[in-house]
Image (cartoon, rainbow, N blue to C red; front, side, top):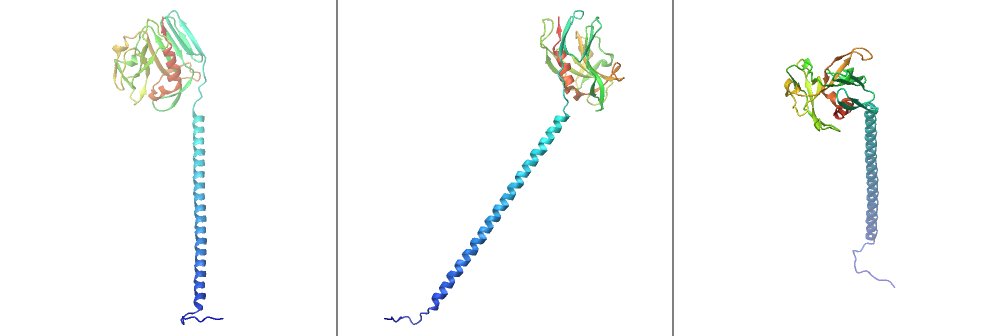
Length: 262
């Protein structure tokens, strides 16, 4: 049995045309998906590349930092720990401790000198010079003539505390950094004086009258070697930054802090 369609305009080809459009849509979707997957792969590859660059940069930074730190460690001076010895002077009524690589001279008439080993000292012209540091304890309060009627403070005075003060001394003292009138180089330091209760600010005048009240007179001075063994020396001016070197800020200051007046 067959049926007649009442729609005379019905064209079977329309079904085929509709199927072609569906096929085109599917093809378009497939191409779109391929392009999408391709873009996703490209994005992932780009992100991986960026991540690798960041990791390489971090590794390079760490390597550079390690190299710099190793160079700093190599350049840092190695300070050999010295054995600390005790010195007792009955003639001067002075006791103190000092590193065993320093030497002590006592004239038994009120003058004691503690001399450092030969070391490299930064002078006022920023040149490294062979010399030594001397700690002088003088019972006679003889002010060096180079001091003049006054000197200038090249740094602010610094307070140090005696480790075991006796009843004959105060608990602490000022360290005063003196530049003599003959020194004209900015930052030039001639000597460090223990000035008791007298403290001075940078560029302040240090009158000789204050120094004459000190007893004993204790001075840290700097001397340049004239010969190879440094048996002969001459006073020298150092750059004020040299006081931060361990041979001054640790060893010389430790001698001063250990002084006992008996």
